[in-house]
Amino acid sequence: MPTLDFLQKRASIPARYLEDPAPNADQLSEILTAGLAAPDHAALRPWRFIEIRGDARHALSTVFTEAALRDNPETPADKLERIAEKPLRSPLIIVVVATITGNHPKTPEWEQIVSAGAATQQIMLAANALGFGAIWLTGPNATHPHVKAALAVPEKDQIVGFVYLGTSSIKPPSPKRPALEHHLSQWQGT
Ligand SMILES: Cc1cc2nc3c(=O)[nH]c(=O)nc-3n(C[C@H](O)[C@H](O)[C@H](O)COP(=O)(O)O)c2cc1C
Image (tube, rainbow, N blue to C red; front, top):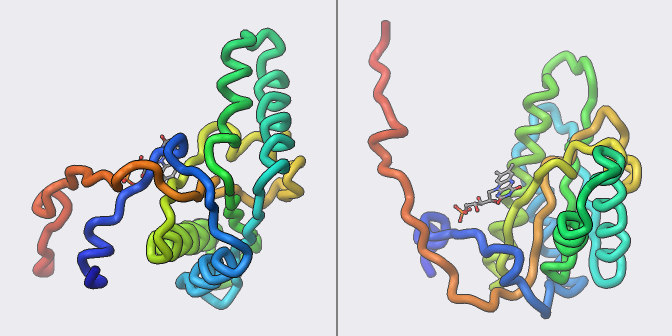
């Protein structure tokens, strides 16, 4: 597919449709290397990638349910079950973390988080380029102190996304995209 088409037609695959095979070690290395090409003000490299696959996903399930129980010890069993299932939907999850340098003279925190977001999108696109499906998810677990501690993410840093990866079991969707005119204006001076 021509590159422009590839970019304009990209679409997320819901995590429940992401199956084995996941990217193998070499493929993942290629995918994450694309992440390292994200724009980055002052070369801070404000990103860290955490690979979670196979049985480790069950450990993440436990962490997610513990987090929910810390918030509400009365969380109903069926809700806990749904929370526990989340990391098991796809065979591989990459947690993208913005590693924040505070009080940087050139690069405020928001820029570092945006850079980590750009790295996340690079990862998504690289996965697509290798034929894999992906979706970028956050939810309450992305900011939960218990989840961050379990993943060894320092309090100052921010999980910008859980990228779920695998082989799509569905034909990639063609979502309707917004009309450009609603998102573009011309500025001609004051
Ligand atoms: C930072 C970020 C966090 C997101 N978190 C969630 C989420 O927790 N749950 C969800 O259903 N979609 C989430 N999304 C949206 C999906 O990743 C996806 O963009 C959406 O399903 C639309 O599909 P599309 O990417 O094909 O347009 C998030 C997107 C971004 C950029």
